[in-house]
Amino acid sequence: MPVLSRRKALVLPFCLALAACETPDPSTEDLVSMGNFRLGHNVVVSEKALQGPLSRAASEGSWDAVMIDELTRRFGSYEGDQLYHMGESVDSYVLAAPGVPLVFSPKSVLIVKATVWDDAANKKLNTEAKQITVLESISGETLLGSGLTQTKEQQQRNLARNAAKAIQRWMLDNPEWFGIETAEARAARAKLGQTAEVT
Image (tube, rainbow, N blue to C red):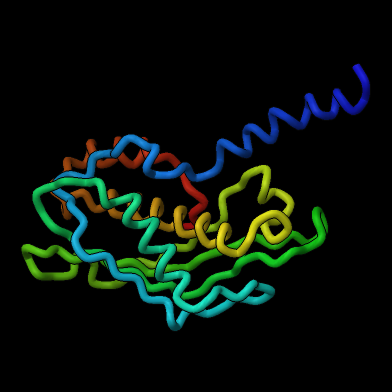
């Protein structure tokens, strides 16, 4: 077998494994149990978001739009019998700029804070906003730095999708909010799988 072909044979399984790490489009996933949850208002604010060092600049309002879109995609299909409102603030971000592969390939990062309200009880369910930090998903495109292979809009979509999934995992850590049995919530969380979350 030629040297080049052997290299391809070795690299291909690695790239496929990396692709499996990407956060899938939630519209293609089976819904996990969320008890009586049904999405009410979905509000995102980002005007005070801090741009991290060596980051591309996000356009004004773009975080609001992409976060609302990804949260709606993840939570909008639930048809429970109780309304819950969600609020998120984008605190800071890094959208990796082009670097030198294998020497300096920065990763994209997003920090958000999340709050859930119970509409019927007219109260906030978490007294302090939950801070969640997510990284970009690892894939064949981002391995050498997403700044080289993705537009900033693609980077934002990647991060927002991971943030929405991480928020759902956190919500399932509080099954009493949604009338879910603990075992059922654990099973739902396990079905969601891991995401590029920093805990």
